[in-house]
Amino acid sequence: MKNFFDIIIVGSSYSGMACALALADIANDLKIAIVEKENIFAQQKPADGRAYAISAKSLEFFKKINIYDDLTAYAGRISDIKITDDKSPFVLDFIGNEVDPVNNQLGQIIENHYIFEALKKRLLLQKNITIFCPNHYQSIDFVDENAHDNAKVIVKLADNQEIKAKLLLACDGRFSKLREYFSIPTRLKNYQQIAMVFKINHQLPHQNIAYEKFLRGGPLAILPLQDQHQSSIVWIAKNNQAEVIKDLDQENFLQQLHKKMEFCLGQCQVISEKFSYPLTLVEAQKFYYQNAILIGDAGCGIHPIAGQGFNLAIAGIEILQESLQKNILCGLNFTDQAFLENYHKSFRVVSKKMLLATDILNSVFESDSLSLAILRDLGLGMINSSKKIKKFFIKNAGGY
Image 1 (cartoon, rainbow, N blue to C red):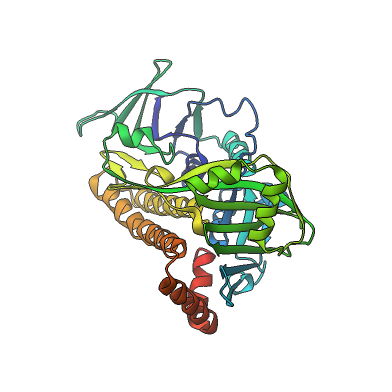
Image 2: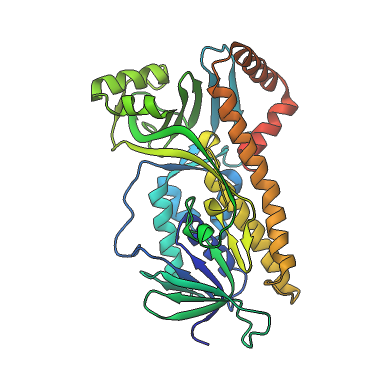
């Protein structure tokens, strides 16, 4: 049947395209449809200031979906992460060769628009993926058990086409309209913070070192790009402070930036537009509704303090891919309640751990409490002095 698919994906977000490629690799006859409202193929995605920290484990996923080689020319390697807390004398070092001794890296920093283009390119080469773009859903209906063609979901598109599938994946981002459409209860937390993101040139080479500086007013991340004299900045501040910082003229903005960076890379210049993003936590109570599954930020969107957002989405995609592959190989159904519940439970374990870690980390380092500052110092010192504890955190930073 021309308009019958195994899986329909709504939203060609980073997670949507990555998920389509991962699932399409399970079997050549697994038919996948992507429905995307925006005409993403009309032009290249412009830079929006963001760069993703891709963990060593997620880079293995990039190899599996065949985009790793396309991104090598744009990737900045992370061989070391240095973590500091304001005026604390301790510097916590995470060394890359303890995770990936071959490449000596914890991961890579890649500007997200390059990832988007690599995913698009690979998507067009995949023969078992059909793209409905630009197009959108008018309605989504779920079918009872007695449907003669095994369809569980029917999607009516904006151009009045009707497509059917066994499973629907919602990949439409943190503020998912599908999550609302299905009335899935969701926890939202407004951090009252803004992330300001931009690129800089700097006098000294970064030597593939990423810096995470926890400072009064909010953390500052300095992320090494492919060029040794360029880095991506993530500067997080409370809403009212961020508005003041954004309105500074170039001279005063750089003065504040140098003060935050403590001149660790010498003199700097901003070389891109400055973009701002309000920070919100999103956690769906359930990651599925009937025969629809929430993927990536549509199900769980976390604070960017540890740079793990896209890595968490990839972890969820890999859980779904593995579960789907097992069911197909064993001739089992992937539309029943047991399959959906298994995905929900498996991803809940992973997502809850990451959500709690980033949420607590933000709260602890945001606080001006003297007692918490002392505890943070003790914590940094203890982690740095214990090989076993430090190795645990390094492995987690690499995604393992």
